[in-house]
Length: 218
Length: 218
Image (cartoon, rainbow over all chains, first blue to last red; front, side, top):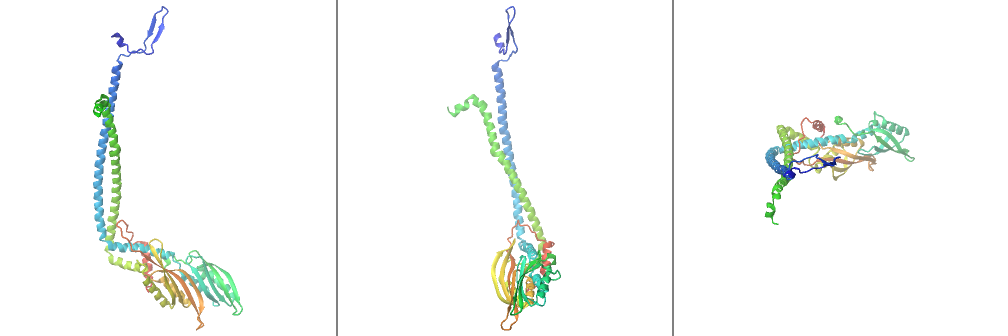
């Protein structure tokens, strides 16, 4: 019975006294039996395990039920909105003719604005050449392409003075200079039989020289 | 060892139930609760998107109702815009207009050829034509100005002319050749979700309308 009380004497210090007596210094004495302590620990662990297990299941069940309920509620809301959309589409269909006209006008307005802002006014080119041509110059040919920088004109004359005047007029801002920024004579061929000189001039147009701002169209 | 014997074992009874509940809880969370909440979020996003769609449709219906009350003005404006840029290529009408323009300016048509249809910018498609005629320089100037002033919009993409001589009368004349481009838009496809961008106060529309009213119908 007595021996049962001394469960463990760990790290006991044993010393021999000068009178040959043996002294044992007891540092720790445990009075609870090891089996009971182990059983208590196990019971506590099992309780915690049960709490965690059943708690997890409970929380999961509650969350699952909440998710299911919320999903059902949102689905009902979505159906209601979709029903409203269906009836709105039916309402829109009643205005199909008006929508066609309005949609067409929006598209055509954009298209027309774009056409006018990107248009090259070849009438400006012809007017520039016409207003720059002195009486002694006969313009025989012209070649121009949309958005091209260089315009080529050919012609003939009996007078180099007239040709010089023509070149100056073409870049004079009160005449052809509204459209052209440079006039270069690329060839002159004198025909001795007719006494006329054929020429070719390359004209460099101003940046957007053949365009009109939208405010100036008509 | 059969299942009954296994489940009757005390360690299974004490540890198995909490562990089973724990794993069942995890399974519920993973396969029911989390997907359920994800679905709720998806539905909420879907509802928000559908409500936005509904709001836009209601607004569009309101605008269309307003426009429908000005149906006559809308129809007249559409006619004006549709003359400039029709909803189909209307090639015979275009050829007819070019012929009328030539006649009114005194140019004699030598060739008029439909070269095909091409995609333009955005919703605009282009009708391409080759044109050749004979006449004086002043006629040519009037012709080009008339093309630029025509109610069905016509652009020049290139211009070339040469001076020639009439062998019979020994008088000079010009033989211009042009690449012409006219435009059309395709029939609109009406969709409930397409926004209605047209408004009578839209500056793009008002400016285009002002310009079109000054053009000449041939």
